[in-house]
Every structure is written in structure tokens, then in C-alpha cells.
Length: 220
Image 1 (tube, rainbow, N blue to C red):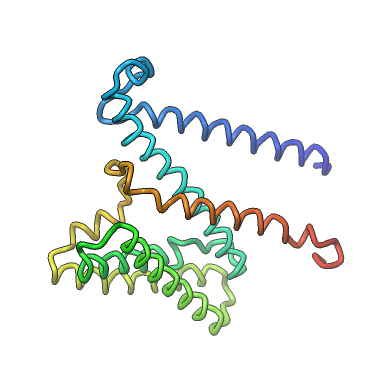
Image 2 (cartoon, rainbow, N blue to C red; image 1 turned 45 degrees about the vertical axis):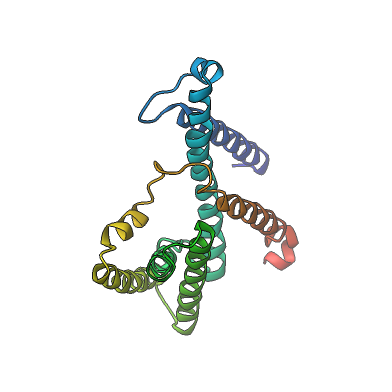
């Protein structure tokens, strides 16, 4: 396919995908345990309060977390030079759950921000261990890289489940892995705005420093 039609098709696909996401966002605002109509939001103050406290917060959390995970996966693929690597196959998610468990055990009464920081610290440490591990091992098959991350994540999860069982937190740990957004309300998701801003900055940075943007000689 010539370059010009291919670029036009890619731009059209981006706009179609963006339109589909925008439509799903609007649908998400009005779908839930109780269906809320636009007329009720405009006329009823109580419904409007519920709409902004619950539906808008839930949808914003979904969009921010999804976009941040997508960009994080892209960055991890660039770091490891492997298209199969993602937060779910590098032990990042399991390590983050371990951080939440530590926060629940030793800082149960702390604010949500501190729990998020614990999860962030454990996620970074777990991911750094994964990157250090695959850099020391020479893999001939690219599929072995994500398999190594899955095994490492399984170790993280096994340790977390052991301590969760000892302290009767198994149900809480399971709910963290499920990633249920139904309980998200205003005041419990605002840290995701920071993750969204970092994702946008990382995307712009990656877009400006691609090999193709540095010239044909460098890319070759």
C-alpha cells in the first residue's frame, strides 16, 4: 500500500477509535445499578449530585487508568524490546497489590494517597527487578520474556496471598486484582489525574523521540 493512502487510513482509524471511545464514555455516564436520564440530571438536584459524585468519578477513573496502563505498556515494550511485555506480564500489577497489602497491614488508617504511594513504590521495585532479570539472561525466544514476568508476578502474588490469608485479608486482595470500579466515588480517584498527566507527557515524549523522527540514517 502506498505511503499516502496508508497514512490517511491510519488517521481515519484513529478518529473512528476516538469517536467510539467518546460514545462509550457517554454511555457509561448513564448506565449503572440505576439508570439515570439526562432530564433527571438537569431537573433533580439529588440525581445531579449522584451523577457527578459517582458516575462522572467512575468514568474518569476508567479512562485515566486505561490510558495510563496503555502508555505504560508501550514504554515497557520499548525498554525490553519485546512486544509481549505489559504491566500484567511483568509482575507490575502483582507487585502493586503487594504494596496495597502492606499499607493495609501497617497503615490501615492512612489516607488513600499513602496507599497509592505504597502501591506505586512496590510496582516500580517489582518492575525494576523484572527488567534487571531479563537484562542478565539472554533469551533466544521473545516469548520467554513475558513468561518470566508472569512467573515473577506469580511469586509476588503467592507471597501476598500468604500474608493476606494470615491476616484475614484474602477477600480484599482478590478485590484489588479484579479492579472493580463500581465503588469509585469522588474523593477516591483523584490521584489518577496525576497518572493521566504523566501518561500524556510520556506519550508526547515517546512520539518526539521515535527512531523514524530522528532520520533514516539513525533508524537504519
